[in-house]
Image (tube, rainbow, N blue to C red):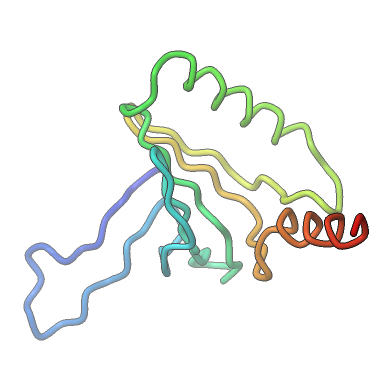
Length: 122
């Protein structure tokens, strides 16, 4: 089930708008943006678990990029390691792909590990 809605249309102006929603996840804020995707911080409505949702507009991708994206998802499904972000769920519509992963609240390790390597080589 993929439903992206904000329920603001048709609601009286004196009622607060409900947050955007993808499936069972309430969108909280944007974590990052790219050419074809945006990453949002979200919270599962039942468990309250925070997740990152990569929202990809498939209409902006060519056939080669779609193939790479599908390969990325297949690889993520196979990975299981304490130092690799967990894939929780993949939702897809005709035009959009939603990749739900574990939320790394301290950000990516890539920049930090690169910094350590650069300093150790000095």
